[in-house]
Image (cartoon, rainbow, N blue to C red; front, side, top):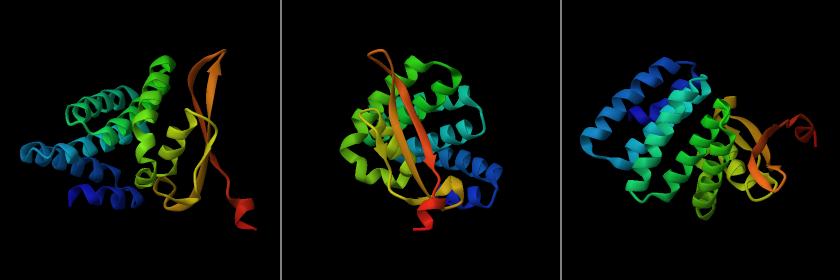
Length: 178
């Protein structure tokens, strides 16, 4: 129940309470040996640290989640962990590591792309953008307080070397007038 409350608390602006609940849920998941839930919680913690500019901590948590997902042979969560890792190390300035993690995540997540909408259009577009220009459906996006959003992404190259992706949240003002 603590895990499910995180999104509601985020929307209400009670991020510190959400962080406290995630710490409690993490302890319970570890005690119960619920690996999948533990990995999801660590991924949430990584995303939270990333959102608040704590990129070193977000990186460490993403790596921890990735290691656990690999041990559990869970490609979906390993793919999401690679996404979190790529996002964090990119903002630290390690673009080669970001591209490597992004490519690894993209390969793992492509088979389960339809299920990725639970993580939002941003993740789906991130995964697709490593292969080609990608566009997400217009859907409610939690970090924008459930406002409808769409994302477009494209690979970035330095010569022939893929170095990352660029993602943009598309403005929907004009689309909404149609």
